[in-house]
Length: 92
Image (spheres, rainbow, N blue to C red):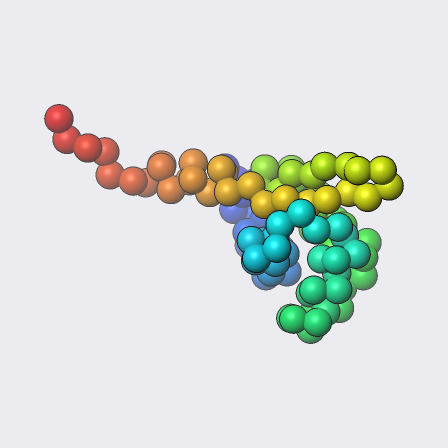
């Protein structure tokens, strides 16, 4: 769970997740362009790639390769597990 909190701590990573939530299955090139156009985040492709690796390690992003392209997809399952941790238990 600590990896998820670490991943969410950075505002650029949260923007990446926002972009994937709006349009899932993007390449690194597409994500970089959307960050520049919509959020004025002009980090290098290498920096965004490192953010994506951290998000993937936390389980918030998974990838699929198709030829020379790598597509990134949002995975909210780790967030659901965090919410379950503090959700009140039902009384019997």
